Length: 280
Image 1: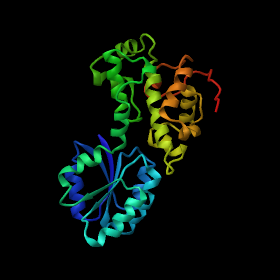
Image 2 (image 1 turned 90 degrees about the vertical axis):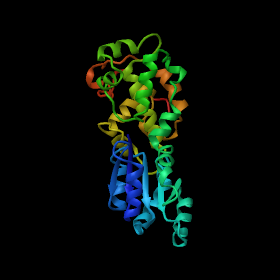
Image 3 (image 1 turned 180 degrees about the vertical axis):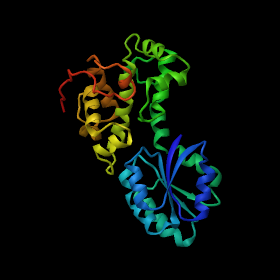
Image 4 (image 1 turned 30 degrees about the vertical axis):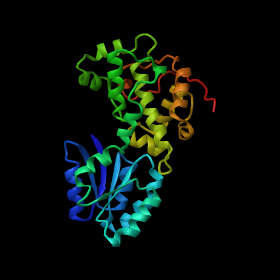
């Protein structure tokens, strides 16, 4: 489910959010202030932020920060009365990507927000496994798509096995066939790709990225990045997805020494002690 943080002070705005995102469709965190929204942004992966134009100074404060979180769509809910015009103009200048008009966009609000959500865009961009990974069997492709739809959130092998109705042993044994990397490396690679995307946001530092993606620490993120692509986590902000995939192809031949259950989903332990030296 999508993770939405909403700051709504007016009943009409709250109703729009409840209708568009019922519990079976999304996890909605209702914030009471701009501070709570900002705290949530660096606490867990947020797919979208919804701001009530009637939230006064809090709305102004969040709109001013929208450009710092370009990977996370900020959405403004407004009546679009003449009095709202200055705020809407400021929102457009500050990087707010969508304006929902009460009474006009109610029926389409879910689609308008969902298609811009971080997880949705991440999944769409990586819907097909990159050729460099050599994931070609139906099982490999199904696993890839299941991992990608989580947009970098932690996932364990037993969770994937249950989702695909196979045993954990069968999944691990059948995944790394031919030239395909191990399941552990693929899971960690997707998480690094998500970390790289978030690292390009001025509002996040390495520690924030590690926190929102569920890494044990920024050091854990750094060791995972070093092991997979031979670069420091601090370098992710300037590396494109294609750069990371090229580097993964060069470094993925280094064998993992930790393929156990504890590391199968989240890369615990940092893999091989024989880490390639970063060349950037």
